Length: 256
Ligand code: 13P
Image (cartoon, rainbow, N blue to C red):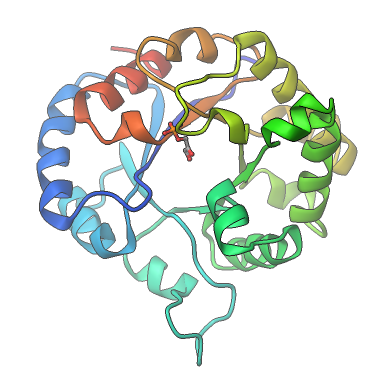
């Protein structure tokens, strides 16, 4: 603990046109001008990725992520985007297994596992999302669900590869609801994630992996969440659409 650099990511989901992306970035850059010591990631929709990369011009401070991709290299996969296409736009990270992909688009741990392998082979860093539903938490099954999702999505991944992966713990009941997991609930789940990662690899490797919390992260709760020993960042939906509120969350994870 203590050596993991915080990583704050914006997941814009199906929001922000190219024009809105440009306007966001103009304001956001001014807000975070003096911030350091934190990794800042923006995951726009595919249509805004090229523009965002161009505007960032190879910035080391702010990196881009895709919200999804397909694991095949090319071919007859209508509507899909490959890792090569993302790499051409200097994309560094890819969000995989988001609960919206799992619940609305039928993504399974087996499919996500293929994507994790393909991402790593193409030097894209996966931001692997996991998390239980409200019914699963109410049934006291959250730890079992977290472990199953991690084992399935990370099957066949070596310790060395795991160091390239960011885990995002996003309890489904906290996404877009305004209900945040309490800091104690979040820390407890994160410690469990790290324990499962240690089982899959070893304790030293698990200790280096960054685990983000996602689910109604806002400027007023970010600092407390990020102060927990196993919370190494945030994956932010709604509050990342506004440059000032996303900047406040970034500042909670960095120095200025
Ligand atoms: P909200 O921050 O809107 O709850 O969304 C969280 C999320 O799903 C980020 O991936």
